[in-house]
Every structure is written in structure tokens, then in C-alpha cells.
Image 1 (spheres, one colour):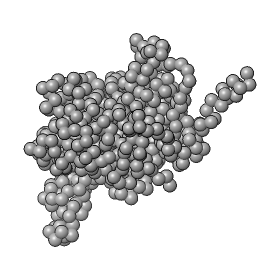
Image 2 (spheres, rainbow, N blue to C red; image 1 turned 90 degrees about the horizontal axis):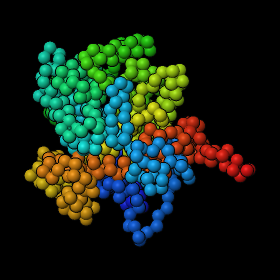
Image 3 (cartoon, rainbow, N blue to C red; image 1 turned 90 degrees about the vertical axis):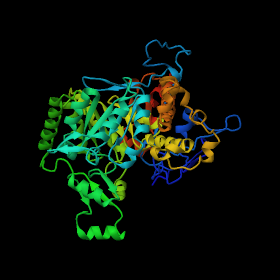
Image 4 (cartoon, one colour; image 1 turned 120 degrees about the vertical axis):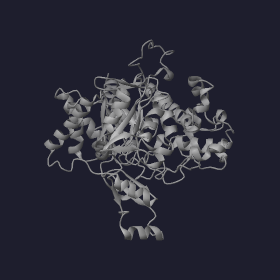
Length: 546
């Protein structure tokens, strides 16, 4: 088993807990005082691309990626000459072909194109309370940067203030808050995506959204996610709230209406009750029936007026993967997000998350294979996003390359939540009167932050850029968490630009599988990405023999 490094002396990062493939801790805490790479990058931005203490050090690679099969066992190619896919107005001169001139914009969509500034999107931020607590930071940060954010499942169903009459939504204040917050700073780049599961479909989420927001929102059908193969869950610590959720039609475990459960709750033996979502397609006995149900769902959304529709699927086996790619392509969906095992969650059964499903790199490799087979038959393949344990700029590059040309962006969950936690904690200290509203967890700034300064202008490397974008007067309305999201995105974007410049591809659509190779034979076998020294070996021998 691969053991991921807990410390990185070169950039000064330390994982508080056990690190996983993404570089994040297995358990990421909202009150964490640091300082993993993502945490630090949310403050210092692109400075985290380089080893610390320049002028006093030299540094060398740890070369930890040659064991096992993971995204970290792919390496990125580099080229000696040439310049490809140059943006408009850029020549192939040395003065023009510099990494800041690399375009990392992308777009996805069938008939209607959705433009994106940075090729990434959030995971689904749904009914887990942590999503609601930090939504302003998530949404405003994503909107300012210009990448899509996903409102996850069950947001209406758990909202006490939502009004559902005759089984359909007539009022949804929390869902409205989520959409409106993102749209406040939307400037034509990015998107707000609303996800829909079994309960959401029954409650009429699609009808409510289209009537209120029209084509401003992308509707997403959900087949699953990488962290679990059952429906979404939350835990509640209020017995009456648990009864409310049961009345709303959810599966609630243990049953809060049972006298023995109420007694155990009163005595403190039970301190939390879980709410679960239902499995989809349980009444479909075959692949053909599942396809028909899915196509009918898409047709209904089209008839409601949706111009953009996406699908999210999890790390099921190869049959379900092929179904998702083929059906999404035939239905002319705008995006298919494929979420592999190894990613994160707001709540999933732990051992399920540890042991179920197909790891991301294997799932994504087969997704490319099936998409290529479909394209070879003459079908236009749906645009895809890869997800599952991805956090850094090299992960973005590798995922885009592994799925090229079908993969247009990378979906990242926990890594894009960290800056919101961090910024809210900092703002709660600097503006203590707002600490409770901000869900700040600190009473004072830790030394790692106090050493940077005691104001947002000093602490966040991205502060001045946002102020330039929104204006000095508007900055008072920008949460520190959103500033941290921007700052992290700046680091990821600049790092991606540098990697792309190194492979001499100056636009994202130019990235191909030719830009990566496998660090070991096991990875080559699993991904069909050639082994390092086999790549261009024929060209090398031709030069030697000439």
C-alpha cells in the first residue's frame, strides 16, 4: 500500500492528519489551523508553486510517485521545441510563448456552450450542514473566479422553511439563497448547477427552478458518486427535526417515532439520527429499462424548458460507466461528471468509502477507452469532467490529458472547500462581531497566519486582484472565504499554465494523452498510457542511427 507523505519540507506544508492521494488529510476539519498545501495556497496563492526560502536553499524532488497505481504514478511529458495551440494574437516567438500567455479557459456543452475561466468545478455541495454554513464563500468565490458550482441533492427537502404543497415545492428559501448568491457576481463565466435525486424529482425541484430561474441554471441528474453507492445522508441531533424529515418522506434511521428510540435519545444513548436518500432505478429490471427511464427523464426536462442538462455518476462497474457515456451522448447532454473512488464526502459510511467502487484513475482510463470506441462509431461524445481525489494543478493537467479530448474540466470537492473554512476562521477573528454568522472556529490567529499580517490585505495574496475586479466599496461584501477560494484558484491556474507551457500546449483543448506517461509498468498496464522510456524511444533510436 502506498503511504503518502505527511510533510513537505520544500514548500513548508504539513498534514494535520493522515494524508491521502489528493494531498489532503483523510479527515479535513473546518477548524483546522493548518497547514496542508491547499490550506497554505488559499493564503499565498501561486507562491506555493515554489520551494520556500529562496536564496537560502536548494531543493530536490522526492520522487515518490513510482509505486502503485494512482494519479501520482502518472508523470507529465516535456518537449524541447515547438509551440502548439497558440491563443489568438500570440506568435511562436520566445517573447510570446511564456507561461502567463497560456489560455486555461475551457467550455463544455452540446448546443449551448458554457464558458469557464479555469478548467475546474466544485463537487456537489448539498444537504450536509457544512455546505450550508459556508455557502457564501463557496459560491461567491466560484462566481468571481468563473468556474461552475454544484448545488447538491436534498437542499429543499431538509429546509424547514421550504413549503411543499400537494407534493410539489412552492417555496424554497435555502435553494433560492444558494442560486442567488452565485448569480450575484456571475459575469458570463462558470455556471450554477442544481442536482436532483429521487426525492428532489418527486418534490418538483426541476419545475421550481425552471419557473424561477429559466436557463440560468443547469439541471443535473444524479446516478451516484465516488464516496458511496447508496443515497445521500446527513445526521441530525434534534429529535423533532428527525421527525420532520421522516414526515417529508425521507428514510430516517433509527426511526424517531418509535418509543424505544425516543427513550434512548432522551437518555443520551442515541445522540444523532441519520437521514438517507433512496436508491434510483430500483424498479428497472434491465439495462434497456434503465435507458428508457433515463431518456424519459431527459425528455421531461427538455419539455420543461431546460437547455442545459448534466449527469453525475459514481464509481460503479464498467457496465454502468458505459451506460453513462453512451446514454449521455445519445441524449446530447452538456456534461457528464465521472466520480471515482478515492474522493471525499460530507457524510458516507466510512468502510463503504474505503472499500467500494473503482478507483479514479482506473475508472477514468476506461472512460476514455469507451468514449473513443463510441466516437469511432460516429457518435459525438458528451463532454466530461473527471472527479475523485483530485486537488492540485498537476492532478488537473493529468486528468485533462488522461481523458483528452473528451474531458473538459476537473471536478474537485474537498480541496475547494478548504479555502472557505480557512477564510471564515480568519474573518471570525478579525471581525469577531460576525464570528457566529461566519461559522468561524478560532479565537485568535495561529502563528502561521499572524506572521503574514493581521488584515485581509496582508494575509491574502489575491485580495488586491479581487478589489480591482469588484471595486473598493464592494469588497466589504466579499467573504474572506471567497477571497481564499480566489487565491487558491490563482495558484492552481498558474501551476496549470506552467505545466502546459512545459508541454508547449498554449490552450487547454491542445492537451492530449501524449503529454503523460506511466511511472511504472503496473500503471501502464492499467491505464494504457505508455511507460516513460518507451515514449519517443523510436524517435530517439532514429536520431542515434542517422
